[in-house]
Image (cartoon, rainbow, N blue to C red; front, side):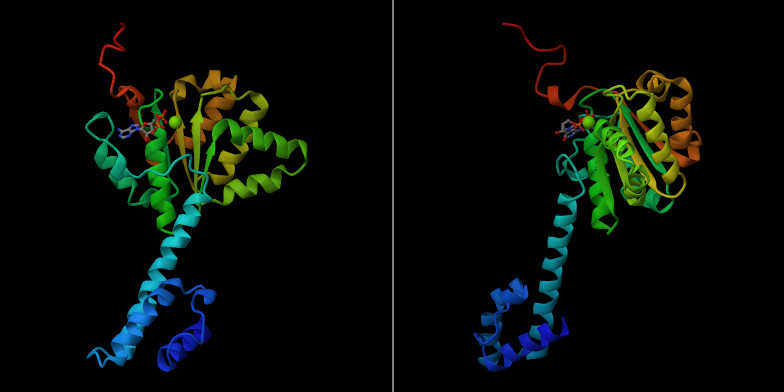
Length: 265
Ligand code: ADP
Ligand code: MG
C-alpha cells in the first residue's frame, strides 16, 4: 500500500499518465486525480498534502463499502433488507425497542441467541436478515442458512466422514442465522446433528433462529420430544440467554388485500 501511495504521489507531482492508478485498484483516486492535479497546478490555496489526504480518505471509504457489500453477498442472505425497510406500523406486535436494542449487537458480544416465532410472512426472516447485515457492517462474520438445507448439509457431511470439519465451519461464524425451523420436519438424525451444532455454539457464539412453530411444537418438528427439548434448552431455556420475539399478525405478503381476505368476483 505504501508503495502504491508513493507512486500515486509521484503521479500527482509529475503529472498524471505515468502510472495507471486503476491498475493499482485505486479507482476513486484515478477518477479524481486529474481534477486535483489541475487544482493544485492552478495554485489553489489548498496544498497538495491536504488534497492527497482527502483522496486517500475517499479511496479507503469506497474500499470499505466494496468489502462490506462483498461480505453481505457471501453471507447467504436470501435478500438484502434492513430495519429501515421494515414497516413497524403494519406489524405492531413486533417489539420495536427490543429489535433496535438487538441492532446494537450487544447480544452478539454476549453470545446470546434470538428466536423469532410467528406464522409465515410476518417478517421473521426480514428482521433476522436486517440484524445479520448490521453484524456484517460491524465487521462480524455472519452465516445465513435455511434450516432444511443446513440439516441436509450436515447429513451429507456426516455420510462423507467430514462432519467435524463441517460443524467447525458453522461453529466459527460469529452470528449464525438458521431460517425457517419447522417448515419441514427434521427427523431424528437431523435433530442430533443440529443439536451437536447448537452445542458447539452454546454460550460462545450467537444464533438467530426463525420458526413458524413455538418451542412447544418442536417435538413434532424433530420427531422426538427429548431431542426437541435438548435443542430448545440450549437455544433458550434460560431467559437471560435468549431473546424470544413472538410476532402475531397478518402476512405482509397479503398487505394489499382487504383484512377479511381476497374479494371474490
Ligand atoms: P417470514 O416471517 O415468513 O420469514 P419475511 O420476513 O420473509 O416473512 O417477509 C415476507 C416478505 O414481506 C419479505 O419480502 C419482507 O421483506 C416483507 N415484510 C414482512 N414484514 C414486513 C414489514 N413489517 N415491513 C416491510 N416489509 C415486510
Ligand atoms: Mg421466513
